[in-house]
Length: 73
Image (tube, rainbow, N blue to C red):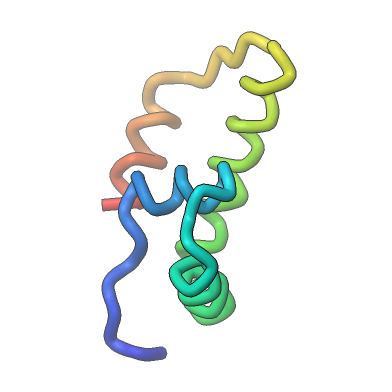
């Protein structure tokens, strides 16, 4: 894998919400193909985002939220 840093929280949020410029989006997609850890984080974040956008109340345990944030760092 290339020696580039993992995407930060803001980049992941923008990726999920389709707010990244095409070139940057492509870079994140390519990175996710190689970094299993980031791919898992993205999948967890997508589940949360989808639930929130359906109007569902998401009661994730605080320790889970902290773990996700720590993984992103």
